Image (cartoon, rainbow, N blue to C red):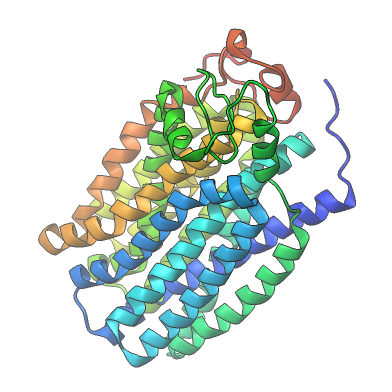
Length: 446
């Protein structure tokens, strides 16, 4: 088997920059989540009204996600990351001000900016990470998302400590904004220009493509264009990609529900203190981080289909214990299963989406599946909040349980495409690039 290429200095800086800013975004997200009870108390709103406030994060996230892929095709990943970083920092500053002034509309607006920045940057990061994988010939996305989870651990620890000493939430988030600014500046300088955009320009020069009014076109497996809005929708004609999108939506919903509601779930659903709620979220973040950094050997040995199916079932057990256990201690411990099970779902499905496609098609497929995953952040927090007003937050989490069970039933879609449909750079080449062999290259484990 061919050895992976050596990493040059520029690629090392590229990868390190992606790792750094994903770490910073994890810190910022966890800082907000850990202080959610304090913000809710400061705003003096109900759980359902807090769901409306959180809807700002959902709107911003989906707005950023829906336009990110097209912006990357037109301007390149680095420009989109820079824009996302700026919006993320602005959002943190506005949230800090809204919390300090106890203005719900201010927190809503800040969350919208924060979500837009996260959506723009994270889709671009997935495209950049997939490009680094192709350059290095080995997996990068699980560790990239692991850095985000590690950031959530750091943010949760800081949030727990600051909650315990009743440090003002506004000043806390303002300090995080300063740190994210520094990380963003270094990252934008280290990431090379043109990722995604260079592929689009190459497509436009392809005699078999039509540059027309679409910016950056490509031909998918069925001869469909992968540039522009119509091209982004056309990739969903692939049944395998649809199933992958459903899997990532369910797994992202499981992760996002914990991110948005876990501290309040422990406080309101199990009667713990706010500090204990933050500690529980930290345990979830530690489990997510552990799963993402340690999952590589499992993927190599068993393949993504078997690993994601097992992960969904483990997460389901954890969620069920949190919902139905009468013991707050047992529910807190079960959060570890929830985090371990949800850890690999998003990065593994993102890698699977680009597998079996030409490099110029991979960006559109990765962006499409990322959009499906982030859609969970649109329907998740508000719907669970509204449902919780009627059945309680613990019972509302049954929705997460059902989605995880459904995802476990369709993980066959994560197997590699059959060799007959492979082109240059896929199949055996994908295995040489460090992707686990699945499908016909792997025993039938699921």
